[in-house]
Image (cartoon, rainbow, N blue to C red; front, top):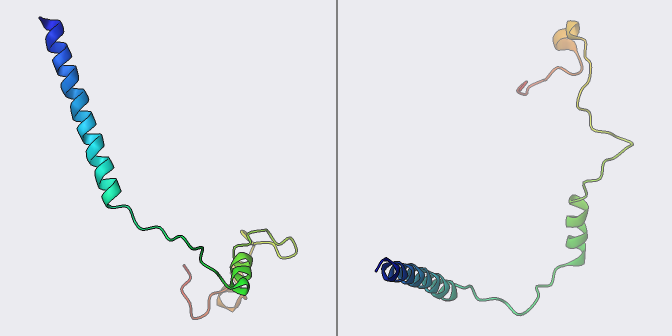
Length: 88
């Protein structure tokens, strides 16, 4: 008797999963965007400019400065002191 109830419960869970999968597949098919068949053409100059802007190689002749020692005794006359801008 318990075996039959287990089979009925398993069949119900399987059918519920199948119904959920069918619903997801249906709405996926309905809401699929239209795909363009033609490949968009871009200006080669703009492509080259975009690729040069994406260049992330480190410039060894002008390295990025993360830390620089400064003389705080110079105060507001120092070259590194912010002028007309937020210090943060």
